[in-house]
Image (cartoon, rainbow, N blue to C red; front, top):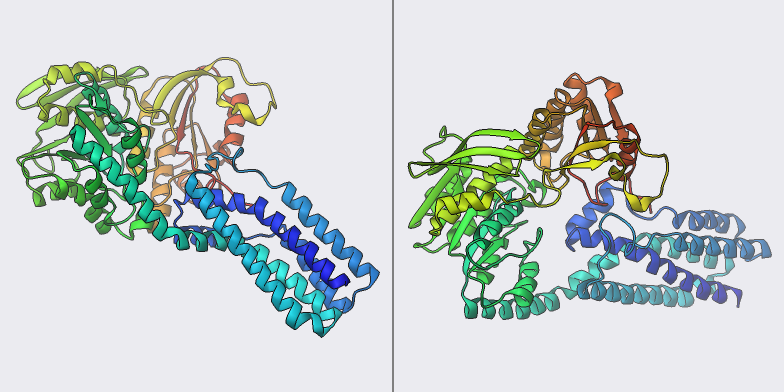
Length: 564
């Protein structure tokens, strides 16, 4: 029968469309750390449910309502609609090879996608059975109508199958994770390095990298690379890279919910800890700053009574944590003593495009030094590392010498003189010829907090050069303070910048309002859909000697409009 043939062909077309589209949804789901609630929230906020694949279906649904039978014309139009869906599927980008953050088909991602696909096939089979037993006897008009309704519902519900699959797999994933974690615990117990935990709303990774350089100058030190700070990320690094020669292990501990740092401390029990700041980052995940404070306190609670706790004395919440968690050694570091006495204080800082000269007063002695780091937050992180290293028994002058060679982690207010042509993202084609000459690029793409944003603007204003240019999508995950904080940062930028390029639509209104409120001419504020387009524009706009600050760089989730 024609009806059955159409349904069979439609089922295969639907499955092919699911495979192509499902990989894209999986990429975004992975960027949300497989958190179902956040992924669903993103789907609705970005209106990321299917539109392109549904258009041919909706058109045919209208045809079915009007035609009410299987004429040759209706059959022909149905075939054309199915071909259109196949073409749309073929034009889907493969997230494994495209996008800022490419889909990493890990074992877990494969499990989720395979189970989601199986659930999708089951849903398709159930729909087919219902159609065959209850709709087919109703006649051609109802058959056609039900067919296209079924296509629309399945296509538009595709991302939800990933969420369902992940939920079903969670018990298995938890068991698998704990098996690997126990192997890591056994290695740590066997090799017994001194474990230093680092947490904070921001500054964790930079502090880890700085402390790594200092400790590595005196003894082999184990440090997970980059921004690895999750339970399973650290587990994998320990299992694969921890060696008997490692005297120290520096562990960055991230947190998105209360209990996550406590869990991390069962994996890597700390003998010492640094708490860099308690700010307003990730408020959307935590629900409020009190929850952030409670979560970060878990690291201090895990440090034994005879351990070392180093906290940011400029942050009243860090001071509160130190007061509530007394240890044998508690040290406060910072820039001034307005909130209370400091054990280590940094002052007389002078900066240029090569780095910063500074003085540190520690236990009554003054130490002069130089570091290639720029900006108050990075220098604060350097001071935290200095304080912790000295508390471990390393001579202050040895620490100062090691700090001279410390370089910032890539994309964390990284100052580099580069040819203007390198501003352009190479893999995205050629276009107009770039301008000759060099610019000073301050790459702060990994920053997304108000303190760091303000400090980066201070650096932009201080360094010598030509025009000062800011490229930013603004800050995210600030809860109900996001609009206010972005507007505030933009007002400050207006007093520093000759040109501001606003990237994406997530914070466009708040940033634009702030720039105007700060007095920046509207002609000096331009909007771009993505970072690539903005940098391509700069490659032809910039002149020799200009200074470009790239402040934050959002992933595909937030950068611009999402089209499905």
